[in-house]
Image: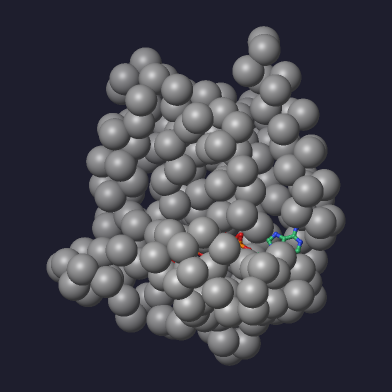
Length: 218
Ligand code: AP5
């Protein structure tokens, strides 16, 4: 299966992707995670991305598109789930064209819908494991021991772009540049499956699994 997972910052894309890859054996490709990895390694791509990410703006398409198309090539026959990509209509077109060159297409487009007022609470309470990437929330999805990762006991950290000011900018960017991607798919006869992401994480997973099970069985 080849899946695109759309949604605002903090909608729960990363949280749901971890569950989806466990159930369906897909490769999880998060553009944000790959960019953060490039930054941590100090590559030229990471340096180009840094100022945009810190400001809550999108990294230019010409940087992100090639990075993601290269990453997709590493997926096995089981497929992949794209988390945070495409994020502009141009990225969506480039993705379609690249897959079509290999006789492929996206099988499912999921759109996590969340109210803006919920986003700030999700973002400011998020804590992540710098070692294994597990994501928690100080109230909603707590680790067994406060501040410590359940998987490897590493001390949890807060992301640099989760301050209220940067979150506001990320939301603005989302509404202006990423919401039109949903229209792009709908206008091209590609069904987008909307999921109410204001619900708890387990309820959101159940809705997604119902849809993906049906696609996998078809
Ligand atoms: P990226 O890393 O993709 O950030 P994002 O889209 O803003 O999404 P997040 O990772 O912040 O949130 P999420 O939806 O994964 O939520 P999570 O599961 O963590 O991008 C960062 C930056 O990189 C961008 O600003 C941009 O600069 C650049 N970039 C990335 N991709 C790009 C692209 N394609 N083009 C250009 N630039 C790009 O959940 C959030 C919190 O809520 C967690 O604490 C979690 O535990 C909790 N939670 C999750 N689900 C629930 C629930 N149902 N109920 C209660 N709590 C929940």
